[in-house]
Image (tube, rainbow, N blue to C red; front, side, top):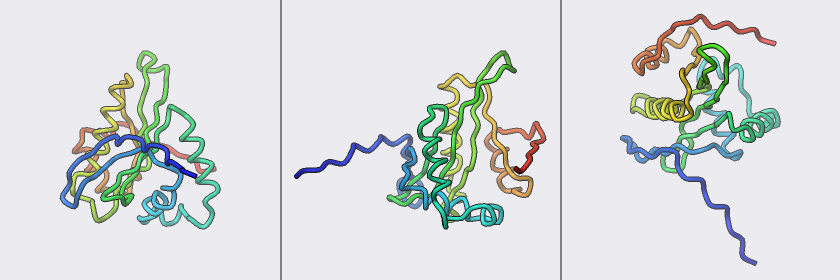
Length: 168
């Protein structure tokens, strides 16, 4: 009996970085443990994320993956998942009924920070938002993440609004 693997989806982006070849691709469910490790690898995520029970993450992954308005992306370096983010498209009535792109959960492995990987990911996401006809790209970043604020400002983002959250 001959079995064939489904053809791999094409890379969304391929770029040379100091440590090798960086590839952005659509996330697969098998990437969840690696994504969770990236999300938990800081002072905020360490208290929010846990790989003890993958079921809620798998349900969320299935919902994201099934909805064409959402894309969960991972970045690989030599086959290892080293980065992730989610890109979502939101319709709205404001700004003359324009669409927005929301970038969420951006994480880059510590060994790759400062090598331009984060900029590659965000610039790719901005390009996708333009192609989709969005008039605005938005994201949130915790007030305690000063380095992230500087990073996004270097890419042209402006802290124009005060974000509010209510934990349920």
